[in-house]
Length: 124
DNA sequence: GGTTTGACTCGTA
DNA sequence: CTACGAGCCAAAC
Image 1 (cartoon, chains in turn brown, orange, purple):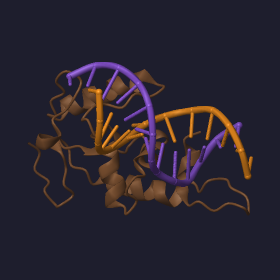
Image 2 (cartoon, chains in turn orange, brown, red):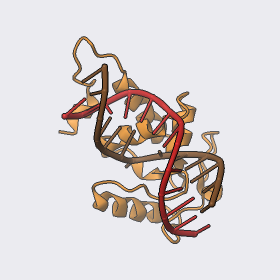
Image 3 (cartoon, protein in one colour):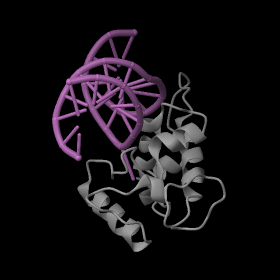
C-alpha cells in the first residue's frame, strides 16, 4: 500500500504533474531536519522553490515512508495539523517530546525549535 | 472539462 | 487568545 508512494504516480500519458518527484524532494528535505527541531509545511515548500504550496508538502507526507521523521513538520502556528488518523497526531506529539521538543498547550514554539536548514544541527 | 478536497497560510475581527 | 474567510493549487473524483 505505502509502496505505491515510493513509485511514481500511476498516471497515464496525459499525466504530467511530477508530484512523485516533488514528494521525493520533500522527503529528502524532511530527512535533514535534525532531531529536536521542526519545520513548517510552508517553510519546506518555500525551501523547495514552491512557495504557497504548503498543502502539497502535507500531501507528500501523508504517504511518506515510515522511517522518515515526518513528526518534525508542524503547521505555521506551531501546531500539529489535524488529519483523518488522529492516532498519528498523538504519535507525532510523543515523538517530538521524546526528542526534547516541548509541546505546551498543543503547540511548539517555532522561534525556539524551528530548523533553519542552515546546517545548524544542534537541538535546543 | 468541472467540482471537491485538503498533514496550509494569512489577514481581519 | 479563538474564529472565520479568502486565497491557494494540484490531486482525486
